[in-house]
Image 1 (cartoon, rainbow, N blue to C red):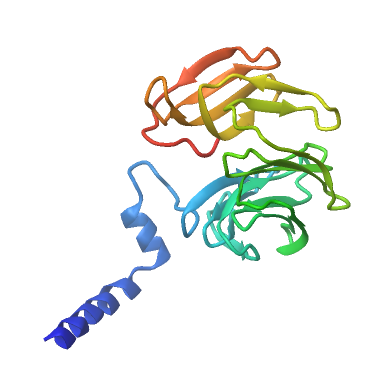
Image 2: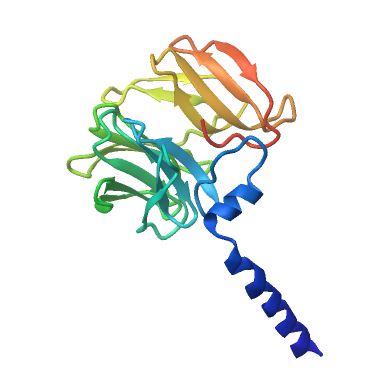
Length: 242
C-alpha cells in the first residue's frame, strides 16, 4: 500500500508541474498588482546597477541578474559557499561587490560574470556591505553582536581598518580615512541602512524596538546632528533591505 501511494504522488507531480512554463507560473502565482517575479531561493538584497539597466538579486543560491526592462534572466553568479546577504556598487558601476555568510567579500565583473577579487577576514557571516562612491573602498560588517566592521582597499585587497565592539545599538558613521566617527542613537538593533542621495538623511531598518515591542520600523535621522526626523510604520516583520 505504501508503494502504491508513492507512485500516485509521483504521477500527479509529473502530470502538472512540467506543463507550467515560467511565464505561466508568474501569471498565475504573482500577488495582485505585481508584474514580475525575480530571484530563486531566499532573497536577501536587491540592487539596480547604477545605469538602471539590470536588477541584481542576492539569494541563498547565488546572485541573479535580470534585464530591468524585460525581466529576462541574464545570468547567475556563483562562488560564495553560503547565502549571499548584501550587494553594492560604486557610482560608476564598474564592479559589483557581494557579501556572504561564508565570511567573504567578493568583487565581480558584472559584464563577464567573472569573480575578480576575494577578501577574507571575518570570522562570522557578513550581514551588510557598502561601497564608497569612488570605488576605492568596501566596508563589510558581520552579522553577530560583536559588531565587526572591516574597511577594504579595493585595489590591493588589504584591510585598511578594522572596527570592533559596536554592540551598543548605535549607528556609527565612519569617516573612513580618519580616526573619527559619529553615532546616531537608536533604541534597537539595525538590520539595514541607506543614505539619501544628498547624504543628509540616514534611514535605518529595525530588527526590534524594545520600547514599542515592534520589529517593523524604519527610522530617518538627520545627518550630521543625529536627530530623529520620523519613524515609518507599515511593515509587519523585520525590515531587512532599504
